[in-house]
Length: 385
Image 1 (cartoon, rainbow, N blue to C red):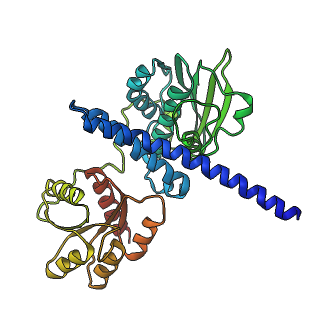
Image 2 (cartoon, rainbow, N blue to C red):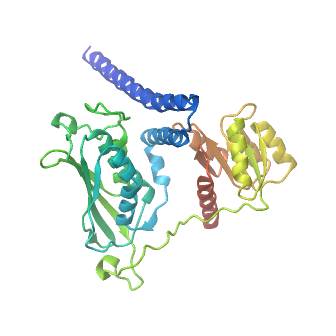
Image 3 (cartoon, helix red, strand yellow):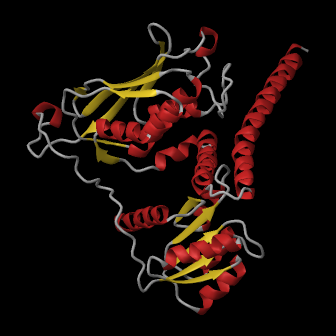
């Protein structure tokens, strides 16, 4: 009886947690969608606002995927760079958002030279943006300060501490233990999915670090971000932190070159007319000849009739879906790259595509940048075999 009561209580807690989750997500999705609908029905030009709302939705979907499948974060590439430069780039890009929130974003000046290191710049940017956005929305502060302390070096590891603090209302003691839990929003009255700080902690862990919360003296919230990244040594074998040499950051070893598909034939399979048309136009802009079909069956027939250098396919299509198309293409001997594209990025779609024989899987919307990075990654993998 005791075990049954315990199970019932656990089921109730899970039900309440899921109900709260779906309530938050429904609100977060419905709000920008409602705004987009109203702007489309209005006679004025709202292209900028619509673009911002769409980006918010896409970021939310990416955040949900990273919560459900955090292991996919590790697929990102590390690059050479400087922590200080990445920090400044993020803070500069967030100045407009700070002004809109009537917040003074202050970044401390460095009186030391930052060494060149090797780290996941994309993840670090996402974490910093999440922290700043969270402060702008929830802190009710007039100022947010960002400080980067002089790092320490341990063999080939550079240890950084970034402090993000505000002079707002702070976080009450009773909520502090749960602020890094997914979908937890405390007593905040502002919009938010409750997964921003959770993702920050996940990213910090991937970057070899931790996050600590402290009350700001005088009122407000302070987050201390501790990172441990790989040091890039100089040709003489000494570290830049030791030699204190001044130089511009080197170009990333994983730099993205302009994609040129001139004289290439590309097969596109996509059932949505608008996306099919835009994808075809985008790839033709790279110099390729594009054959676009509305389902997997028609795409397979086209592949049997002519040679193609690249295939880009949606997953969910009538007659023959993306999984079936990828498998069939490999069975008939197509050895070129196949890039799968899907709007459903939270489940097991990516894994199933790769198992079926796809070379890479991308989340919609597809872009030149995404396609370029995918093809370069495929090329690097083939060279290493």
